[in-house]
Length: 116
Length: 116
DNA sequence: CCGATGCATCGACGATTGTCAACATGTCAG
DNA sequence: CTGACATGTTGACAATCGTCGATGCATCGG
Image (cartoon, rainbow over all chains, first blue to last red; front, side, top):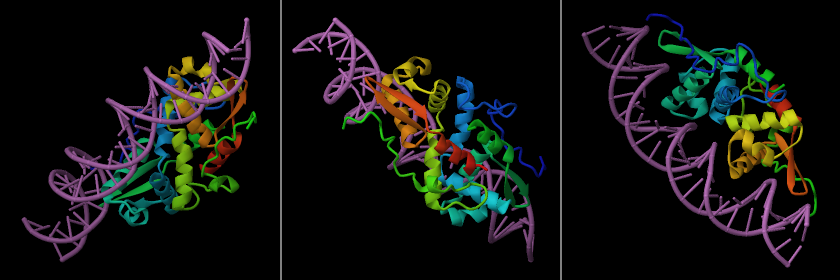
């Protein structure tokens, strides 16, 4: 239990990172649509989008440095990082007291592919 | 008032089709994040994703033909087509009694670009 | 003109979501 | 050990969302 790496949750939406359903070429199944929708919904909040862009810009950010720029309380930041982490979009690395968040580019690439 | 083309609503999110904010390269402004989030939120529902993929697959579909495959009542289909239309993702063309929905590829391309 | 059809709108309902205060847990400095 | 700090968790609240029945407005066929 002394691992320094958070397993990035990785909930249920593993259905489309083995291979990638595309929205436009073929009709989506119910399961594919639910998995994809969960990731798009994670991007469907302005605070989370700004959080994501901050992480991408700085390559590594701790939660405490996002409270003031985002103008939200600490539990709210924690809530949003969890949603993005569950969606496989970011990943948290705990070093000491801080958690350093970074982008997981694979899921973003899969999304881009799904819109092709 | 006898036009056969629906103006595709085109609400407020014109901010990012003039030129395209990217999530990963620079920190998003509050306005950019809100506009982008609205479109991602439109994709954040499994029924809307399947609706979108049906429209893309058939190139043109009327609402009546989506009621049974999607398993939702007519007002619900109408609700979802309006959301996708407001997001600039689809466009409805009224011909006779039917409205034929088709994909608007530009907004999808902008989204793909925003994830690059 | 009349009945049927396709769709939008309205109103209502339960479910989900974004937000934060309060609290709990774990980590570091002294 | 103790106090300060960073973060996750819980519970509560208002707001939004997805859904559908009822209704209204066009349009078509006869």
